[in-house]
Amino acid sequence: MDSPSRYMRHILLRPIGEQGQRAISGGTAVVLGLGGLGSAVANLLCRAGVGTLRMVDRDIVETHNLQRQTLYDEQDVARRRPKALAAAERLARVNAGVNLEPLVQEVNESTVRRMIEGATVVVDGMDNFQARSVINRACVEMGIPWVHAACVGTYGTVHTVLPGETACYECLLPDAKNKNASFTADTVGILGPLANLIGCYEAVEAIKVLTGRREDVLTKVLWLDAWTNQIMFYDAARNPSCPVCGEA
Image 1: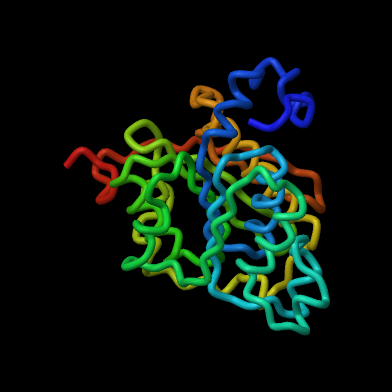
Image 2: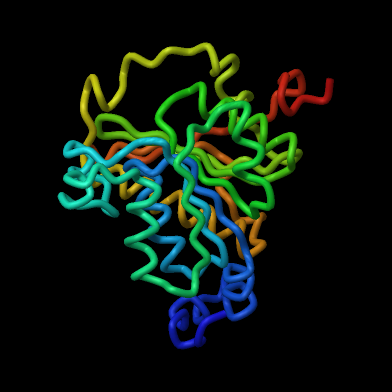
């Protein structure tokens, strides 16, 4: 761990303390997708001092990303920088004590297990049902906690999956891999600050897992509308017949 003074604001927090900060510094977080959600999460976990930060995205930085994706700038657009490399370049200047592992790859069934191998926690920054289903199955089968989230328009959701303990993504959205979303940021837009707001919730959940505070994770589904200031929590019960995490 770096000099304790760097993380003193965390160490002073009762839920974290020095032991928790050491756990963060010894942990590995994998962020899959570096768009609005993932770039916010990667930034915050790097600043929190996570030991290894593996960041995965296949895309390059485009102009429309700059409205909400805080790790990138116009130079990245002009250079057609892959998001993973641009993020690593920026974050290396933020915290030299973090081991950054950028991967310019697609998240799919043939790549995901290698991407998340050795992870303490996996964080979802993807924008489609199919990718989340792939991540969910891999994390459940490998016993790795993961935080998933989504945001579009002015609202977003967050939920944390603890394999074998809480409802998984398939429990919440059966057959999600076959769903096609017509309501996306490309079709209806997205409030710029929303991605960062939901990303902050994801980062907090990841820190809970990294520090071993599993009893404090968000096992319900958090839903919020940033424009109307509505916040709701929905129960998330495990499905005993779930094809991913069920008992059968």
